Length: 547
Ligand code: AMP
Image (cartoon, rainbow, N blue to C red):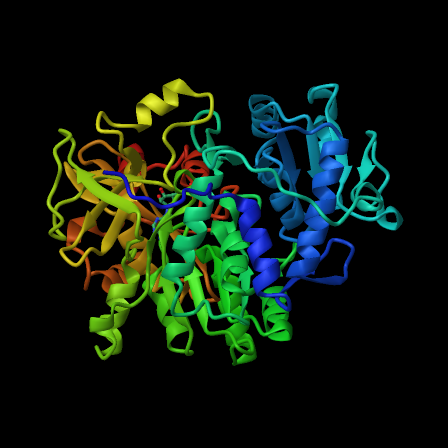
C-alpha cells in the first residue's frame, strides 16, 4: 500500500526562495576581483539570480544546456549557480588549475557553448581560444568600468543583468533533472564528469545541515575556502541558505594572512577547506598569537588531516570536523562530529577519534571489500576497498561508459578507490588511496599514517610518503618533507620520532628536503607529480651498489 502524501520535486530553486524568505538579513559577503568587498542579502541574491536567469534565456540557454563557469568564490558565481540550475540548465564548474589540455577536453566533452569567467582568468581563455569551439561565447563577470581588454569578443555580466526583471516564476521539472557538472581532476587518464541532479543536490544540502547541527545556527557566518569551482564547495552554497548562515566568499586570496584578516573582519564562525589551506592559516594564527574573532568551527577534508593540525585548532578552542568524501559523492560521505559518549573523555582520546575520518552521513552506506570481492566485517581491523551507495552518490560518469563500468560493482555500489577500515562504532579510517599504499615485502604500509606521524614533528611543515622501487622488497617508503623552519632533523632522528608508532620495517629509508610539495588542481599533494619528479631517484642501497 502506498502512503498518501504529496510528492513535490526537490528543486534547487526552492532553496533559493526559502533562504530569501526565511533569512532576509543573511548576507553573501564577497571579496571581489575588482578589489572591493561586496555585500548582498539573500533576497538581493534571489533578485539577481532571477535577473541572471532571464539573461541566460535571452542568450538562448535552454533546459539541459551546459553553461560553464571559470570563477572564484564570489556572489556572481553564486548567482550563476542558482540561475543556471533554476531554469533547468546545467552549471558546469571548471577548475582553473587544470592544465590547458584538460580544460579543452572537458569543455568539448561537456559541449559548453557559453562560459562565464572572472577577469583573472582572461589569460587562461586567451591562451586556448583558438582551440575552443568557434561558436563559444564568453561573459566576463564584472561591470563595464572594470571590463578588461580581451583578445576575444566578450560580454559584460552586469550589462547582461541591467534591464532584466528581478521577478521570475522558476519552472517546475522532474527532480532527477541534471543541475551541476564537475569533472574529477583526473590524476590518471581524462577527467571524468560527475553529473549532479536537483534531487541529489537538495538531499546533500540537507545532509550537510544535519551533520553540522552543532554549529550551523541561524545568524552565524560560514566561509567556504573550498572552491565553488570544485564539487559545489562541498554543498555550502546550498546548505547556508537552508540554515540561515551568511556566506563569506574569499575570492582569489587564500593565503593565511588574507584568510585571517577576512575571518577576523567578518567574524566568521565556521570555515571549510583542505589541510593545505589550514596550514597557512595556522601559521598566521601562531604569528598573531590569537584566533580570528568568533572563529570556532573548522571542517577539514579532501585529504587526511594530520592529528597535529586537529590538535592545533582544538587546543585553541575551535571544534574540528574531519570529513571524508569525493567528487562522485557530492562530495561529503562522512562527518567528524565528536560522539556524545566521548564528550567527557580525555583530550587525547577525543583527538584519536577526530583523527579518524568520522562516521557516515545519513543516506550514505559503506561497505569494505577485499581483493576477492568479499565483504569484510566492520571490526576496525579488516581492511579493503571502500564502496559507497546512496542518493548523493553518482550512478555512473557523464558520457563515459568505460569509466562507469570500472567504477560500479555488480550490486550497484560505487568503488571509491580508497582503502579503509570501519570500526564497530562506525568510524571510518582511510588507510590510503589504493594506488598510494606502499607495498614492502608483501606487507602494506599506509602513506597517510606515516605522513600524519611525521607531521607531528615540529621541524616538519608538510610531507609526503611515497614508495620507491627496491630490488628485494619491491617498494620501500621514503619521506619527502618541507621544513617548518631552519631545523633539518636527520633520518635517524626521524626514525626515533616515528618508532613509537611504527615497526622498524615500516620506517622510511630516506628523508628528502624540498622547498615545496607539488599540489593537484584541488590543493592536495600530488603524489603523481612527486613520483615523476623523483623518476631519477635511486634507493640509497642501490646507490651504494652502483658506487
Ligand atoms: P576529490 O574527488 O578530488 O574530492 O578526491 C576524493 C579523494 O580524496 C578521496 O577518494 C580520498 O582519497 C581523498 N580524501 C578526501 N577526504 C579525505 C580525508 N578526510 N582523509 C583522507 N583522504 C581523503
